[in-house]
View 1: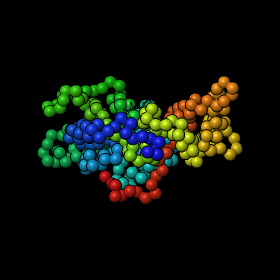
View 2: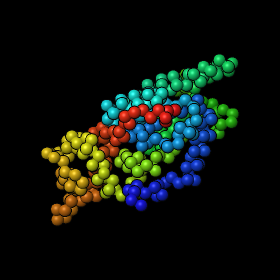
View 3: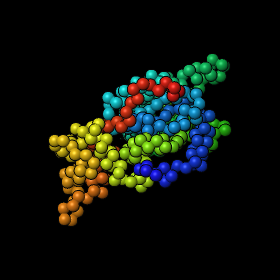
View 4: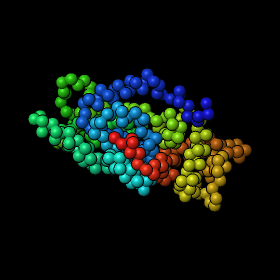
Length: 297
Ligand code: GDP
């Protein structure tokens, strides 16, 4: 096995995946609209590979979360990409609440055909119901907290719905299921797995940190060299591979007794700086040049 990210050691295994899928399907029955959270830095790698099948035609919209950490130009391009697929994508910072107002409006718009249809068929008008779906760590809980504005306005229990499941009212027209749907990431694709590791979506103890950091540095050196140079005060031509890590370690004073570079410390600095946005706003997933229309909806 030459893979850097070793799949069997991840938390997801077939039984676990089937259970997650079943739970999501059960909750799907309760909603009109699915809000799919993606990480704006890795809109492809953070997608669940079978979500389209699971959602099965239900109106869906995309949140490009952690947009505060992503390259703004790339995010705009991703929004256009999804639009070409017929999907609304809203950039959001779930921690600071940026984009949340726009998101609520987009959800309402997405749900309207469904709720209008209910009324047209003689039903009593009711709020549109939605749920939030995404891979672990993408920001589902943060977004639910943001949307609920801290003080959750609970909706009365409904027959047939477990008491534990609560609904949060978002304005007059919308209700959100206060329980995210959790699905597994696309880890069978080594490039996606790497991007998930870079962003911290995969636990650091299931892969070789040293190899992953070298690959991250290599990616940044190619795509965002000036951010690297600025952060670590590097000048001239950037070295590649371990030499770049060594230089960063030297600049940051990661030294062991005898003046040797403490590589492990340097690796942690790079990872923490990258994940917190101190290495600039970076988008790792490169936009496919042609919209993948065969994957639409
Ligand atoms: P969940 O597992 O999908 O529910 O993810 P959480 O809501 O627990 O978020 C995982 C981590 O990402 C937490 O450390 C959050 O603070 C962070 N996070 C969530 N949304 C954002 C965002 O929009 N921007 C940034 N910078 N961090 C975020």
